Image 1 (tube, one colour):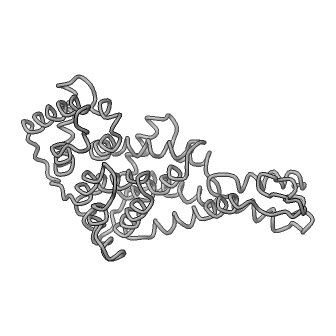
Image 2 (tube, rainbow, N blue to C red; image 1 turned 90 degrees about the vertical axis):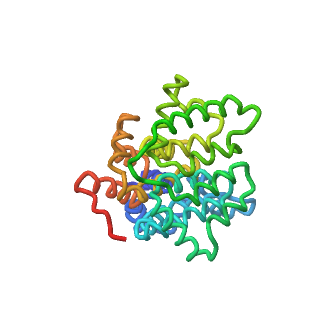
Image 3 (cartoon, helix red, strand yellow; image 1 turned 90 degrees about the horizontal axis):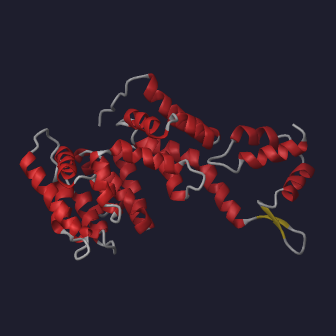
Amino acid sequence: MDPPNDFEALAKAISGFGVDEDSMILILGKWHPEQLGSFRKRTPQFFLEDERLFERLDDNQIAYFTKEFLRFKNAVVQWTMHPWERDARLAHEAVTKGPQAYGLLIEIACTRSSEELLGARKAYQSLFNQSIEDVASRIQCIERKLLVALVSSFRYEGAQVNDSTARSEARTLGVAIKMSNKKNLIEDDNIVRMLTIRSRLHLKAMVKFYKEIHGRDISEDLESVMSLKETIQCLCNPQTYFSKVLIDALKDDADDDMKEALTRVIVTRNNVDMKEIIEEFDKQYGVPLSRKIEEVALGNYKDFLVSLIDRIKEKPIEIPIM
């Protein structure tokens, strides 16, 4: 490549979702100080020049580069962890970040089996010397009651469903939604109880009866209470939920939390239901997930995620023995 093209290629290699390590090595490995100086002058989006004509890398760009270089490392580290440790660390990250990350607690509590959630709770105690239930109980937000109940739950996972109870609770939920202008749904003990102790099959039946009784999907009536909507989505239709999380992560305007979800979903669901998520993603958005990742992500990070997806399509999943 000639220098101008090298400058453009290098800027592209460090300006995406992850970094293109091969291009960086190819270009930077042959550059001399003069070419590095020319690159700094040609990329004011990265380098600032003060009144003394001193060129320095912008602090925000340093933070950005660090984050993008770490994506591949973080994906590999998450992949090699025991699932219980991984979930415990993700839960700790969620409570540390605050309200904008509490949806991650809902995701973990509602998409893991009872045994998996119990394992994550044990791992949390080992790693952080306190219980996730205790930490959740100190959260200062309106969702505290729901979050504590979700992370503390141990759901029945058998096949038996009482249709009469499910229908009755669908009616109860409808009444509560109509009265939500007087009492916030998230503070309704009956709603929290139903969503945190009932089995997934029971809740699926309740959602079906809700539509029969009220003539619309329950998700439409919970648009204003996102935590409850996400709870029901994660419990009753996790593949659709995860497909939406993935497409949001791959959008041009995705923020940092959205982007981090790309690694999280592909890693945590890979030995669970990733095949169904891939199929749902293709159905919902009309493009294979691996192709979308190849269009957006860069370098080793891209290659690693695509390899995790390809392994799902190439051979049956072998569930590891815990």
